[in-house]
Amino acid sequence: MIKENKLVPGLPSGFEDRWGKKILLKKKLLKAIEKNFIKFGAEALETPSFEIAENIGSFLAEDEANPMSDVFSLEDGDKNITLRYDLSSPLARFYAQNYQELPSIFKRYQIQNVFRNEKAGNGRYREFMQADFDIIGNVNPAQANAELCNLISSTLLDCGLNKDQFTINVSNRKVVQGLINELKISEEKQIKVIRAIDKLDKPGFGLKGVEDLLKKERKDKSGAVTKGAELSDNQAAKILDFLKIKDLKELKETLKNPLSQEGIKELEDVFEIIGYGSNLKQVKTNFTIVRGLAYYSDFIVETNLNFKVTNNKGKEIELGSICSGGAYSKLISRFRGVDVPGTGISFGVDRLLFALSQLKQIKVEDKKPVLVCVMDQKFLKNYYEIVDLLRDNNISSEVFQNTKKNLGKQLDLANKRELDVAIICGENEFKDNTVTIKNLKGIKGANSQTIPKLNLINEIKKLI
Image 1 (cartoon, helix red, strand yellow):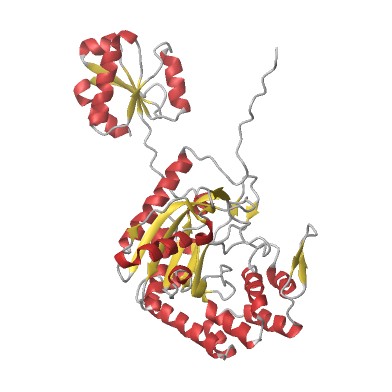
Image 2: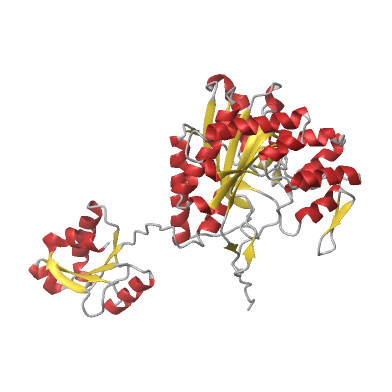
């Protein structure tokens, strides 16, 4: 007899099953996010999971020799198609395809899964949900970018966080670009410089790690070597001095080149408009964030949590930004040939879920069903009359699904499922037109009551 090989249940790395309370929390977050997106004036958009590879491009890959190394692609006839790795590239394609039918100022939100072919772990997944909000069109940039900051704050507060539990960090790419131009850093080195700066706050980097990436190379603890931008000592020193500046006023006095001054003025305008509302204390300048993605042009934002997050082994980890984005002008011009300004943010829903699931302060409503126990199969019709009555009154309920299990086994399963209430009816109850309600969370010995069936709904509502 040939022994059959059994499959081993499991998932590839970077993917996760979710169930129970984690799903309930995720639904609560999504409800809060979508409510705020609509409250701030956006309309919904959905795009397919796949895009034509050459349309979607790739701005994330660290491997310059293989710019599509971070995406999942496959052949589709004479073209390659790619699973979307963000929601911004599909938005650009959609806008370019449909701009004649869209309003001159187009505000859209989109909540869908994206896919990244990259190393997973510590709240990073290879399939995860993003929730994006974008404003496309000729608007006052300060108003639009201030609106993003207000939206982030309103949304996270509605998700259950307190104001001291998150910080909205903002900067402007023109500030660092002006410095790069002033230092006469060649164009082919600029992306490496920007990526080096962007890693300042990443674990294991700091100023020394950034300095290594600005110069010849960086060797990590494993011995792996990353080739640097090969700047001169003077160029690297000027950038490191810039990274130590925290105050907008000090920056204004330090960087005198016109482009940096322009970026500083744009930030001042954003802060002025934020100051008209109640979120000014939530927003801070952080000039070390430059957003490595090549399509950001000026304003940039990253939102970080101010509490500790641990991995599944209980080790504290660096989670990274839970909402980021910025302004762009070239994204749509790849299709239309003309620059169309836009600005937007993206919530990493699953990363936010990973962090918030560790907080006990955020309560979720878990509507457990009322269990109608089966005392005798001959009363099955009566049990379904009870469950119909409960459901007609919008009370989650079910009849126990195995008529051969005794009452003890039925209540054991109810306790394992953490149910609150069971209804127990036998011959006496049906003869007297009563029902027995058992409060499964009550004090043992005083947790059952027999009441007229007429009062069933009112009594059940007191217990759930």
